[in-house]
Amino acid sequence: MSMQTPGPARPNSGRTDGGRADGGHGPAPRVLDDDTDATAGSIAADADFVGEKNRSFLSRLYTGTGAFHIVDSRRKWYLVTAAILAICIASIGIRGFTFGIDFEGGTQISIPVSEGVTTDAVSQVFTATLGSAPESVQTAGSGSSETVQVRTATLTAVQTEQVSRALAAEFGPALTADEVSSSDVSSTWGREITRKMAIALAVFLVIVFIYIAIRFDREMSVAALAALFFDIIVTAGVYSLVGWEVSPATVIGLLTILGFSLYDTVVVFDKVSENTRAVLQTSRRTYAEQANLAVNQTLMRSINTTVISVLPILALMVIAVWMLGVGTLKDLALIQMVGIIVGTYSSIFLATPLLVTLKERRGDISQHTKRVLDRRARQASGEDLKQSRHVGRRPGDKAGRRTGPDTSMEPTGKRRRSR
Image (cartoon, rainbow, N blue to C red; front, side, top):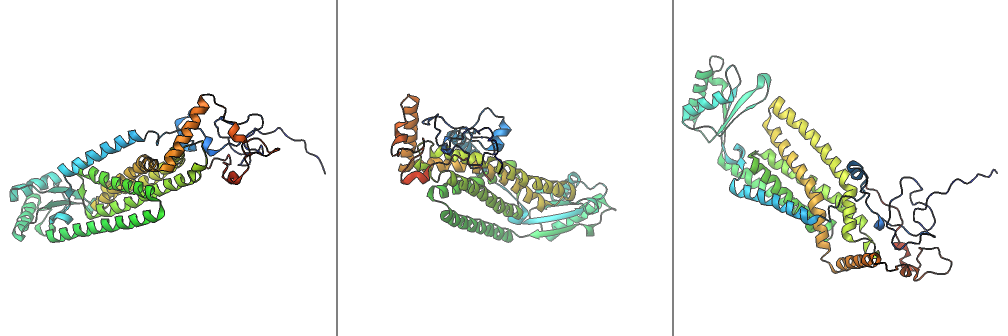
């Protein structure tokens, strides 16, 4: 059996066996050199990991090294969130919403596009005939199926006939009165649609509340629900600010993006739970720091999910608005576009920071945070912390190795990577 010449020893990763938890593959994480024994090696933990700020922005974003202090800056994000909420609530209270014909009721007149038929010309004919301007005039469809859609308050049969004859007289002989079609939506039906919309939203929120209460602990449930209500208010506020029309498709899209927002929050909270599972058994990192690391580890995933979700919505908007002119598709795409962006913001900059704030009100978390900060203060003052590492060590044990019942809780030195 041939003997192999041993190669050069790999750098010690901080484990007592001199090896790497990941088999020696990949760059070794940077660790704090606090109470370690440099001659014998010691245990390097996730809790000791320090974000590498000397890397580029994209590199830190991709590797999830914890270099973005989102949780540490939570007061700033609270102010930003409060400002956004104040603007949206003020717009909803002052400007209100622009409800479509399906909610308010009314009459819709459809005119096939021919020579001279434009939105401005149709609006002028309508105003001259009835003495009042229509609520909205827009085009729909493309090519031979392109039409001009006029929405207005409910018209009588006589008024509808007057408008049809006036349009035929203005744009004839290419347009006849028989080619002008109209449809009525009663205000009663609109109120029924509004009531069903409110019921659907309430049922959704109740189901979500039950799921979150079972899936997470109390603090996580409160933070997730707060992010969900933020998404609802801000999305509605954007519609109020811009003046986009609210249609049944808008309500369907709203329920869809609320599910997306909840999913994004669940993914981030799962990583927070994983990182903080044994945080109270260590005195190296606080709950807030481990939660911030979880946000960094899932940050690239959240961005990728948002981009992948937005791209088909942009394609839908291009096809719906510029090619087909289908108003329903446009309404559905707009609400999803706004909701996905708002949901990504809330899951990163609101849900986890709020979770940390709620957790730090608990006695065990606050005491642990104080213990970690006190340890760092003693270390910074030059106090020798090695004595505590030798308590309970048997003769012959390797340096940095503890004995006792909590050995299983010792950090492994391997930094988990987000999936």
